Image (cartoon, rainbow, N blue to C red; front, side, top):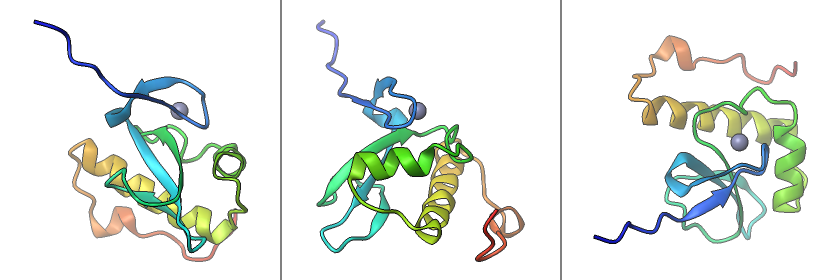
Length: 110
Ligand SMILES: [Zn+2]
């Protein structure tokens, strides 16, 4: 049997090639929003990051994404994105996110 072709993409933060399912797609929509793309097929310019959440607290996440998506990402957009990433990471790891764990201080810039 032939081995199945696994589509690979490069993480914009660590530049490592990974099977597509081990990455999360982030897309800049034609409307200028920067959002997590769970389907991987949303319109717009996309970039991939590791799906295990290793970059969520990486201070390079914002700059690398801005470069990959060729747009400016506000702190608020980045925070929203991180929350979405964290939720997605928890889901793919089979961990239930409780209300307490997902609650984050809103609007606080570290
Ligand atoms: Zn990575």
